[in-house]
Every structure is written in structure tokens, then in C-alpha cells.
Amino acid sequence: MRDIARLLNDHRVGLGWQRAFYEDLHQHPELSGHEQETARKILDKLAEFNCEIISPIGGFGIVAIFRNGEGPTALFRADFDALPVQETTGVDFASTRLRPGTDGTLVPVMHACGHDMHTTSLLGACAVMDANRDSWNGTFLALFQPAEENATGANAMVSDSLVTRVPRPDVCFGQHIMPGRAGQVQTLAGPQFAACDSIRIIIPGRSAHGSMPHASIDPTYTAAMVVVRLQGIVGREVDPNDFAVVSVGTLRAGSTNNIIPHSAELVLNCRFYDSTVQEQVYDSIKRIVIAECQASGIDQEPTFDFFGHGELIDNDTSTYAAVRSNFDSVFGENSVDAQRTTVSEDFANIPRAFGVPYLYWVVGCTPQHQWDRAVASGRVREDVPVNHMGTFLPEFEPTVEASTKAALTAVLTYLGSQNVT
Image 1 (cartoon, one colour):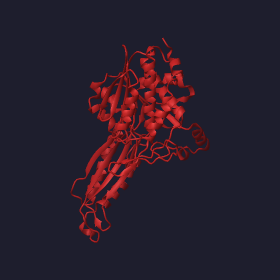
Image 2: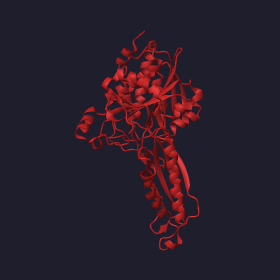
Image 3: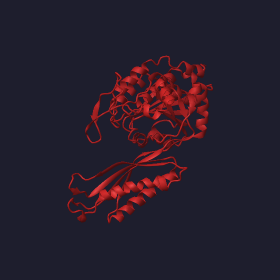
Image 4: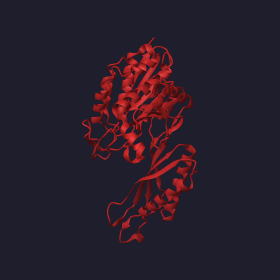
């Protein structure tokens, strides 16, 4: 039986295709819900392996099932949609695509969040698992998810009978590349990515000509007062030991200069690590909006529409302990503690649907020389591109190496015929 530690050390053999595959995905990104071309490329690559393919699930979702006798079942998820961002990296495989946005207007499209790397790494793990079946037992599920950026993809797959169409996993895994020294694998037990919601608030008013404000009930004025009052929730109502974010993303009211509009719209983005704090903040938001409407003489009720939900990513302690010890053995000094991050994503909806534990971690992707220079100068915030920026681009080799090997290490922690170490 082949030694698993050697398998991990030799896993790059036969994966020379990853760079070309990654650059192709990067150059040809697709927006959430429109990933037909990307899904076809994934399916074409999976066709090279001995696996059962379930597709489509929830739009363009795909699950590849690698069966290898009796044993546990482990699921690994990667996402593959892109963002409406103008790429400014200057590389020869940069995206120049324009695609219709949500309102039909053409927008630039870019893999500005690293989903092209996530997909490339998971396909690499599929290739290694397929070629080395003497080193593991059980079932490996490779799940490729669309529409993460608008937080609909995971739930769409769940709603499309995911849990009955594939074997139930014993554990689920996922990862995300983020700013950090390329090749570092960062793990944490407990909350890792924040829960989030967006809230669309409609404040009703009474329209009138701009020359006759006394004939109106001005919803723009009320909305402005709400924006000011919202800033006091985190600063004056949330315990300083807790965490919360309440950001006003948009305020829309009116269409011309001389008409007081009949309504105003606020869109908020809120983030938390604790459901009790979340409920407290939402109660406060509603209280403030309703009170400001009453103070302005508005007799209609404001409306609250919650959308864009991202579930808290709360890593299972036992799963973390099992995988982290192997990460330490495999990556050495490049296995480090993660920090909680305030970004959000919908991965947790998948293990929650199955009712199983999970681990989700971060892989550093910033070019090593750039990261070291920024740390030395104390200018990380200023000099390091972050996800969703037009300049975001991972250093390919150390990032794909760490991401592929991390996926394999986690899966083999449960499916390996012997200890990874």
C-alpha cells in the first residue's frame, strides 16, 4: 500500500495541466447564475476520471462521486462564479469580458475572488484521488458550486434535492484563497467567516413639488435621520466584547431635482459572529426605522426585506483538531492559526443540510515577495490587493500547490488507508 505522506509529497506529478486550466477559467469568467461555459469545462475534466457525475444540481452545480469500497464519505466543495469587476492586473490572461449585469447593462467580469483557483485545486485533488485508489477507502464527493457571490448557489443545490441525490457525507470541507503569504494554510476552530444579511428598507412618504415641501412628507429626510441613528447601534447598544457591523450600502430617493419623492430605499449590510447579537441588532434597526417614520408623521408602515443571507461559518472543534494536526505535519511552518474574518459566504448551508460537521480554512495567495515587503514596511493594508479588487491575482504555483495539497490532506484524514503522517 502506497504511503500517504509520499502521495502528498508527490502529488504535483501529473498536474501540469492545472496552470493552463486556471488561466483559461481566469480569462473567461462568468457571473453568478450564468456559469454554463465554466460548468462545461469542469465536466469535461471530470470525464477523464473514474467517477459518477451528478449534474445539473441547482442551476449549474456539479457533484463528482469517487467510490472506492467501504469506508467514510468526505465532501469537498469549490465555487466557480465570478464578479462584475474590471480587471487591472495586466497579465496576458486577464479577462476583458463584458456581460449583462443584473439590470441588463454590460459590465466587466473578473475572477476577482479566487474561485478559478478553488475549482482548479479541487480538480487537482480529484486527479490525485482517482490515480491513487490504493491509498484510500470510502467515498470522495467533489462538489462544484455556482452562484456563491450572490449567496444563492448552495441553497439552490440543496433545494434541488442535493441531500438525496448523493451519498451522505460524514464530514464536509471547503477553503478560500485570501490575502496572506502565498502557500500558508490558515485554520481556526469555531467562528471563521461572519454571518451576514442584507436588508432592503422602504420608507414611505408623500410626494409634492419641491417648491411646496409643506405639502409633502419627505422620505429622504427621514431616511437621512435613520442613517445617522443606525450608527449608534454598534457604538452604543452592542457590548464592546461582541462584534457587529451595520453598513448602509445604498440610499435611493427621487428621480429629479424639483420633486420630493414618494418613497426612499435604504439597503443595509449586517455581519455577526453570534445569533443573539444578530437578533438584538435587527430589533434595534426595526425600532429606529419605525420610530423615525412616526417622528416624521408617516402613517404607513416601512417594509423590511431580508436577502443575501450568508450563514455563519463555525468550524467543528473535533474536525479542526483532526485535520490541523495533519496540516501541521504536511505544511510545517506554513500551517498557521487563522484570524476570524468579517467576510461571508454560503458554504455552511451545504453541511447544515446534511447535518454533518465541517471545516473551512483560508489559504494565503499574495505573492510572497509582495507580502514580505508589505509586512516589513507595515503597509499590508495599503499595498496588498484584497478579494473583489481589480488587482487581485494569486501567485499561482505556491497557491495551487497549497490549495490542492490542503484539500487532499483534509480528505485523506478521513479516507486515508493509514495516517497522513
